[in-house]
Amino acid sequence: DGGITQSPKYLFRKEGQNVTLSCEQNLNHDAMYWYRQDPGQGLRLIYYSQIVNDFQKGDIAEGYSVSREKKESFPLTVTSAQKNPTAFYLCASSIGPTFTAGTGELFFGEGSRLTVL
Amino acid sequence: AQSVTQLDSHVSVSEGTPVLLRCNYSSSYSPSLFWYVQHPNKGLQLLLKYTSAATLVKGINGFEAEFKKSETSFHLTKPSAHMSDAAEYFCVYQAGTALIFGKGTTLSVSS
Image (cartoon, rainbow over all chains, first blue to last red; front, side, top):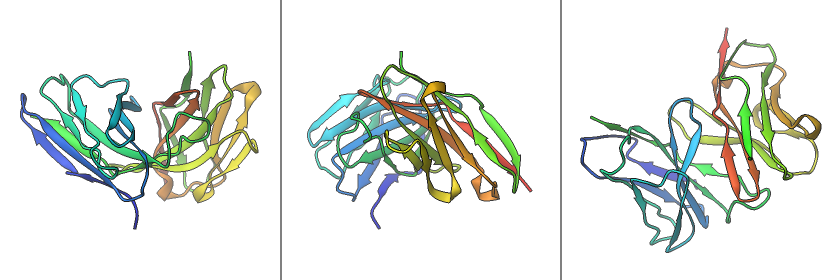
């Protein structure tokens, strides 16, 4: 079955450590996204990528980094510079570039929950 | 400024009774609007979308929503709630280059 796979599902990190969250898709989608979800806050966009080897900052990119070396992979690194990294992280993809009318349908992975100890 | 507001953070219903989850948007554009559902510790799944065709949109699992431009609303309804509908629901607004998520409404269903 096609879909988006995120790993790990749960992750614990000590302060000062970088961690990388994996996101892989086999939907052949061009665009991929990382969102952060906090209780009562909805989803906030961290980074997105419309094509391989290109990515753009979202609304809350500070303290995060990404790469897009392959179409199917879009890993997110949470760096020690992120002051409040404990959250639920969601990866998503879309068939083509979003942000044009009617193309806002996203396909989501099951998320990774990061807890800083 | 463009925005989307979910008017209730929490809605509680009994099984078999109607569901109404309210969403209002603010925009000078003609928007595309979506409702997504999220079960605990899972990703989001698309329920339905409005993209300027029919104003009454039918989605999966018996849900539907009506786009009312005069009221700038896109409320989600279901005639009869099921226990499996208990989840968090997000109204999402897209206009121009913006894709904006509401803060979510948690739906509880009691037997």
